[in-house]
Amino acid sequence: MRNLLKKTVAIAVLAAAGGALNGCTTNDTLGRSQLILVDESAMQQAAAAAWQAQLKSAKISKDSAMNARVQKVGARIVAAAGMGGQPWEYVVFENDQPNAFVLPGNKVGVNSGLFKAAKNDDQLAAVLGHETGHVIARHAAERASQNAATQVGLQVVTGVTKGNVQKAVSNYGGLGAQLGILLPYSRKHESEADFIGVDLMAKAGYKPSESVALWQNMAALGGNKPPEFMSTHPSDTTRIKGLKDYIASKGYK
Ligand SMILES: [Zn+2]
Image 1 (cartoon, rainbow, N blue to C red):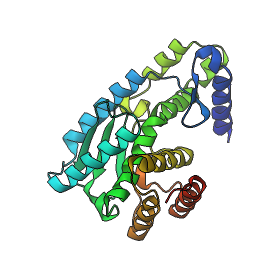
Image 2 (image 1 turned 30 degrees about the horizontal axis):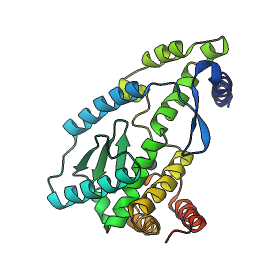
Image 3 (image 1 turned 90 degrees about the horizontal axis):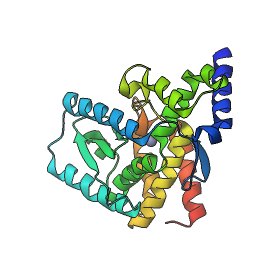
């Protein structure tokens, strides 16, 4: 409880000092302000290291049909996001868990097991739209900043510059771990990514209601829920309801 209070105070103080720190930015897509204390280049550097480790330790799928589908649907989604001019890297991993993830620097991993749930291109577009949504929303940088705010809370109270915060951040643990690259996202971040993903599906010419079908397939698979895409927060039912409401409010089919 005491820790929680300390954490809340630290974030509140940092947020209040945001203007001075240049750390509070408004994200137009989200329509809310974000605490961003870490540089995009630092995030990408940490992500590149985590990605290389993943490529080395995990088994990469050579299934050409799966790889081709991910490339094709991914390209349509990022084009709809206006990010088609950037380099994107998609890799299918030989892994039975129905999961996917994105790292800063546009690196997208999709498990072969995801195709048990994503039964058509529209449903795959729901997954890739969601992951692209995390990038647009700068969720990784926001999460890392929130972690940093917690860790350097005391220094913040006594006054700190943005440079000092970044220095403090860089002193914490391993690169990927310190920036929270591999942690699951919060429920709020998951919902935001879901909704941005649905918008991208619509823009790219996919059928937004297939995102609901995807989650129903995910729920039917059951089993142990890994972090990130098939996260337990929001729960499948909360998520499905949220998507249905959002799709109805936008008049999507
Ligand atoms: Zn997610």
